[in-house]
Length: 382
Image (cartoon, rainbow, N blue to C red; front, top):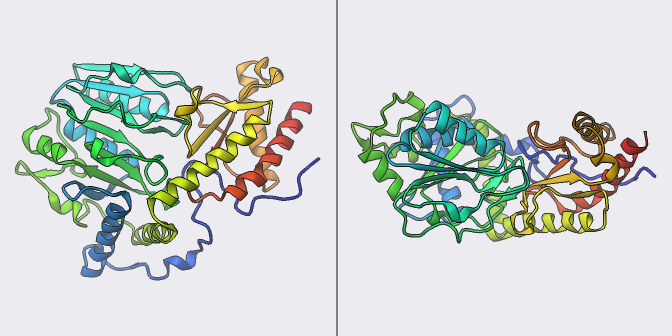
């Protein structure tokens, strides 16, 4: 039978993600619209985002954190185009975004010494193969595969290369030890439910040393440049942004950060996300038609929770029909106002993708599960 109870918040998209509980446009009333971001007040707002982010994530005092153009993608491109090429690169990929960085490294930058360690959706490469005398580029969490690295034990403390990490669907929801990394990138639109457009770039002292001691062979666009006359442009990481940020988006980011602080900070954000994963795991355990896409439980994401359909009826379908059935489930739930945007990423295997980050209430996930069972039965039987 069709369930009667719907989630109070039907937003389960993996980006942009659900706004924080009780969010409303009223939180933007103090935004400095019409004001210059370079005014004293505008710079103060941007600096407040930097300071609160640094505090919430426990970023070391000698690391630099700044707001940069073009979301997480912009932050990663800035890092790769500015830092790579000084030594060999190990590039890891187990989903579409990681593969995108591999494409940039091999086909755009065309670096001569690159080792690629790739794995299919649901799996992760053998991390023991990584050589830390080289630069290493990887995602902490595969947003489109639901596969995350199983902790940080594989990352060498004493390394010659740089650890360059796209952590956009991991920070604020998982234990990501910043001190084990040299470059960390993310966007506000993920775990904090912020609006899109801007990214955050965190650099270690070793990354800054690379910037000042190495000049890439290729030209750098203005929005990628982090040095001037061979010296690190520290002002970029002190509210002097390269481009013009949206002060509405900045205000929204501040709201998310203040909400997170009020909850109890990073430990509570992580707890909420892991509790959401536990709720999904309990439903999967009692549901015969579905399973996690991540094959190893230690690598299951608590944010971009990707599920595959294992019912023999579904498995026997041709690939195109599997994709169509998966889309029908998502469309049916959207039509019913039970869940929005739960289809898998366009390049990922057919199935379901649920965002489980800290802005999602566990009670909403639990209200969704009967709807998932109902929608699947509807698609299968019709």
